[in-house]
Length: 305
Image (tube, rainbow, N blue to C red; front, side, top):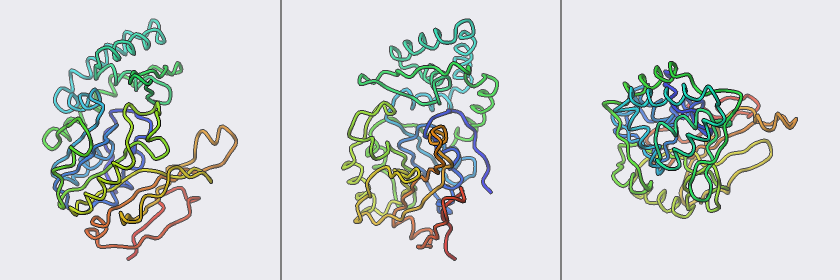
């Protein structure tokens, strides 16, 4: 059983609920874990909580998000106090205050303002316009995570990451240029079907060809990696198949029933895909997977003995 990790950033698309299943695909020893599309950094936090990596690099191209994680590690009390100030000031008119903080964030790119916006916005689902400005609206049914609970989660995350993690901001290829065969990379980039076209869920898009080229280079260097990149919901497939020359091993993870489909009266299960590099499969020493039925609503694979 894996130890649960702290939950700092409520983030749509976070792998927090799937983190334990992703950890099942980790080798026993990892010198450095890289998470270049960190978002909520759920996998990095889970790995830290379970002592699975000697060092961790948390990275994201969105600079305020990278700065937020730097504050979690180095200035947890300051981050919590700034969030608490936003959370307290909102009570007289939560909708108007949310709009005010959204303007502040778009002008200053304040990490604590971003944290407040994500905590308050609809479904914790960030949205950006074509100018890169945060434009999601508030969820008027709730006021966001209470400061007292956030303080506990941030303190736990800071303690876990303080002596093991560093934070970087920039293009994922630059972040990964020093990775070696003794390291592990976990990537959760913008999903296929959204890259190449403006999608409001992402501040930055990803060129699919650039990703494929980088995966090929990692293969040449024997750097092991895990990639979350597409999936299915019911009969719908998201994303095209990745090239065969990458020699990736597919793993399906049941993410649960689709809440949107349920609202529409459809009983559909979402299955998210993991792709394991051949060098990782070799390190794990197991090459075959047994797929289980998605109806079981749990991890859809187990290692063959």
